[in-house]
Image (cartoon, rainbow, N blue to C red; front, side):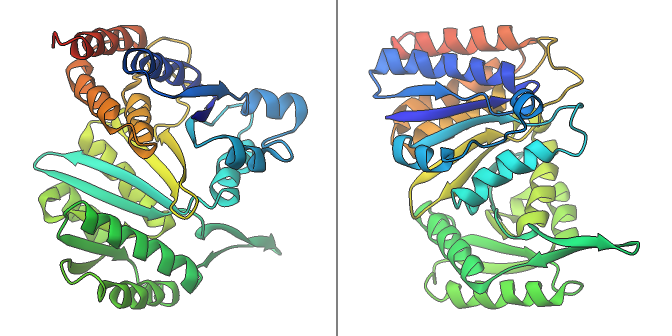
Length: 328
């Protein structure tokens, strides 16, 4: 089984190699059928060649690889993040990765947050003319239906019993009402789920005050982007937040830490690879290596206090060796 690896920019070039060391150990010790290839898509290539995703690369990814382990994009030499939109958004839309899953491990609660990943304000529709700038929020019923249907099924399969739709239908009525209509229509197939709705501002307030109110949360692209970072702050920071970008129909997935490229600490050896390793564990789960994923997760929390990238990595590797050899 092959996976593609895109370290990207900044600390992605540090935390992704750290995560690969854990995958290499697990692959060797547990005899996993897993190999990977590293791709140099990022700011350096963009500046040198003006290229984000090479022609034909999306087809190659879906034919030859099962998943992507992704680092981060962002470089001060490209202040408008043109390469980030071309690469990451290009992968999400080109590979139809419409489900963004971001688990939040919070005090007294684990919240499964699902963000629609391909439309909304991030659909790229709009323009500027005569001093007026317009960004258009676009949602199609088909996109909302397939997203909501997958999320409800996934929550039910996980044994969750409460689901919350987060929207802003009072201020953004057209797309908001579409989400409400689809949500309640799809719920009829899942009588075991108790449903509620909240406006996004109220949801963020209550998530901070009492996360135990929530089990599963569904929301659109922009709101999910913001709310998941609020959740990351409650976990201790963006360095602890991992994510999966999924296409349920093809089974393809892209797994990434959500902390960004952090240019202020890139190259200092201070980047925490926790989220990159947690993303690697999510990838292992996705491709069917649940036991290996469980071993990796169990070794991350004890390693969290380590001060540097290398110290954290060595601690995790040591814990993994002990665990896999029956000494931990």
